[in-house]
Figure 1 (cartoon, rainbow, N blue to C red):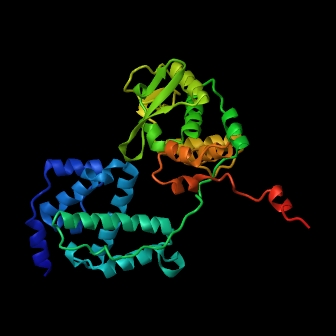
Figure 2: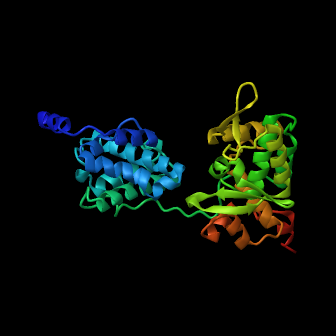
Length: 344
């Protein structure tokens, strides 16, 4: 039997240069063993799923689904499953249960949201294999994930005073300070996701009279012409002038070299996260914040000031107002006015 398996593996044609290039683009060194055993049709479907479907529109989703699928297939192969068609619904179900089980019980201890994300990636992958006629059926279709109902987001938001304290603490005499101040001000006023801010080029910043606009590519590839808050406009103008950024294709937010000069390369999201934490620590505001904090903070401040939920939904590019409401922390906490409503 082992000789037959070795012979079958040896008879498979080698990956083409295109396949190798796309593997590298996907960020993996080799195909999962179970995919390799399906031959060219199988590995072509694997690459097409991650690079040619809507999964490729968002790099974060693409990476999360890739990890979920590769981890699952590796576990299956390690447990003795030889071909993709041998994977049953019970195998998928057991894996999902293992992910959510506490570590003390031998599981991974992942949150319900993380488990649902991994199941979504596995389910979409197998559905695609069925469409591409690699498999006759999907083993993940009937597998149920954990029930999750979210009414409030867990992302830490800043109070108005905390946000102002954070911004005021930044030394804007340096190019790094001007860059960070511009990023934080724009993030809080536009509610753009960190990925959308990273994509911004100088050409995307448009002046029209006294007002300025940004052409922002948001989730799903939609490009929106968004007015810029006056404080963010002042911060951006000061930063771009000091940086001398005039070339249309240059990234607006760039990494900085050890010598303190801009590199011309996009400021990676991991570096943005480090910047946010560092600035929070220096300002003496809660350090358990993230890049997403400024999206939630902006929405909360907007609604506290009397802004309409429907307008907040439009600015945030949410398909459902219930998603926008999750970011709203304007009614969090118990106030003295609430307590005094109890009259006796």
